[in-house]
Amino acid sequence: MAKYLPNPGKSWLIVKPEFEEAARSMILDVNITSQGQRYLGLYIGTEKGQAEFVRNEVAKWEIEINQICDIASNEPQLEYAAFTVGLSKCWSY
Image 1 (tube, rainbow, N blue to C red):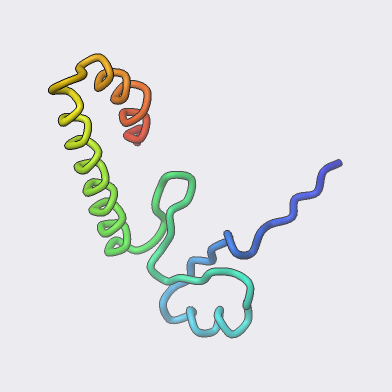
Image 2 (image 1 turned 135 degrees about the vertical axis):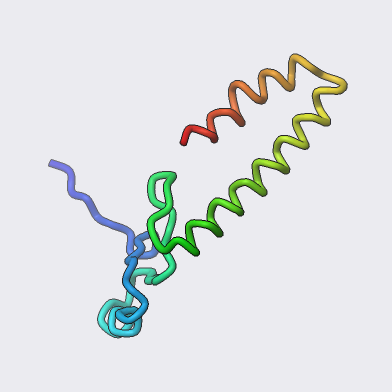
């Protein structure tokens, strides 16, 4: 039987802002935030944090689309493959 040994450096504890200091004083090895964190491709946290997360994702997508458009002018088949195999899979939600 395999054991699950969590990596504290990769773990996040999301707490309400009023409990953040108390959580930091009790738990030392885990990342702690009151804004939120990405979890399995989604964002868990405040609306402000969620809006910032979505804004950053859209900015990344915009850069990637512009790069693909540059490729398309010279290599349309390569652009099609890059979009269908790579970039479109990032937009699953």
